Image (cartoon, rainbow, N blue to C red; front, side, top):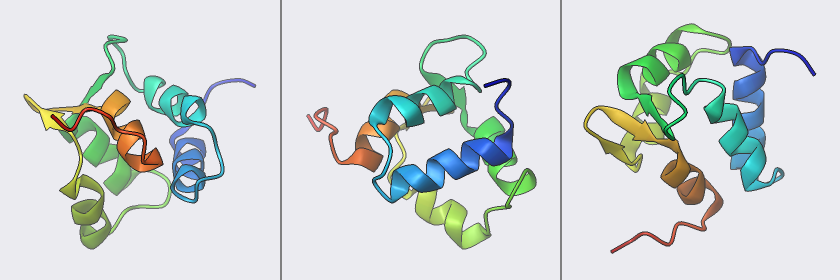
Length: 93
């Protein structure tokens, strides 16, 4: 309950990587940072959050995280990213 801070987001994200939460939980965590509600977050914004808030990601963690990230036009498509994380991405055309 209440607002989601970035540390909570990272906790949800790490749980998702472990496969313990449903896709909706991770999608909703990303949506908290999607001001426009379009399923996309500016790449630089999410990278800044990951490098400077909560438990900071290292350069290597950033490289690994964004290696397969669906980024188009400078925006992370978190809808697709959730599918990649959960192994349910069906848009490989």
